[in-house]
Image 1 (tube, rainbow, N blue to C red):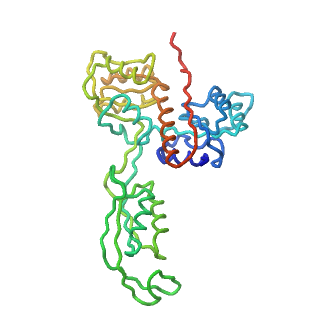
Image 2 (image 1 turned 30 degrees about the vertical axis):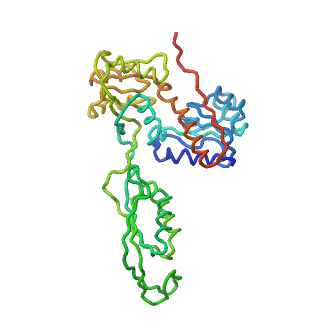
Image 3 (image 1 turned 135 degrees about the vertical axis):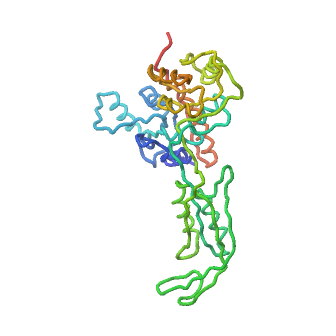
Length: 371
């Protein structure tokens, strides 16, 4: 089956919903049409002239990037500038561009989760709460004949997840009463006559971002003209999403030993380290890209080392003063792992759906050369 851009977009946003993106971000479709072809898709950290040229040579239909091609509002497109020429050529080539940025960073199986696992962390948890998906209880009253149909509909719409268990619900049987008035078209009963019907009280939990679609699915599957249902806000903790992760190593290492592990795992020629290389470390935080803004809060998380990139001189001094070591593996070094991750994820999801789409990973030349 031929995949369209909207199909690839839907898969991306199933795993990395746009509501996880920071307010200042610009994730989503950048160029193109949702109805465009997506038979050949390239994945790269950034989109520059080199990546675009490869896309032209490969006859790619779509490019997925981590960093948005269009980040700030475009006030003018001058074909004589590199940015203007790039936009013109991509549009002329009919190549759609999609970006997943901070929503990819924060996703449950996103970039920081991948980075934490690659770097040997165990008992991985969110570092800071960027966003919480609150929990609600959805209760609906359904005639016995339709309880399974309604339950399946709300579960398929995303309700009923508790931890790693799906399709979680509870039901109890009782008697419902109602009297159809003038102007109604009742599924059961006659106008003006009090009816008693065997019904189930069906209840389940649903996360906030799935609530509207669960309600719509419930109403569509329900036989009644007027559906009786309740929504309760729960104090149970919902899903916590974070732009970073924290965890423990299986055993303590010296900072020197762990820095070498990071260098090896990420395939880097060099890294920068702040701290006593002979000190023992075990509690690790990771923030892909540029995570120095997290330094001030790391003490309360009892973190020994922050693995991130783009650390400036004064930020390094602040970490030293707090007794926190830093392994600066670079912005590109901590993020380009997303290329293979997305290719494998999208390939798997497309196979399940029967889409015949080829995914091409593209790795960029490092900005900084070692001499």
